[in-house]
Length: 169
Image (cartoon, rainbow, N blue to C red; front, side):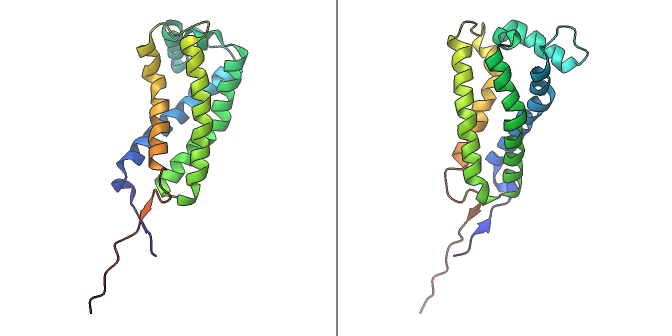
């Protein structure tokens, strides 16, 4: 049986996932990596870190307080999960079927981390004061994971089997 590749332009959900993973990777490199090294500062020279401080001050005070467990989780996200986003983007761009299971494993790991983080954000000692504003930049992580799980639900997410021609006698 022959399987044919589905080109990326015919996989619009994959394009959305690639864009989301690129956003997550941007966050890993330009925010989370710095958060691992030192606390966010109100007067940081980097405009993005300064904006992250202002956002956290208003909508995510837990992130700003930087408890040890959150710093560790953020460092794992920046340096381990960041690699997962790169692998995910390459897998989706190239349509690499053998990476389906590793991508599902990555999603499981990330989902576990998100559920724990969200639980503490909503029900912990410092809940997010405005859930909508908290979810504006954070909720897309679940969207990306759910879309990935949806796309990887079949054994061949990047190919299809063409219909067989019936021989007439």
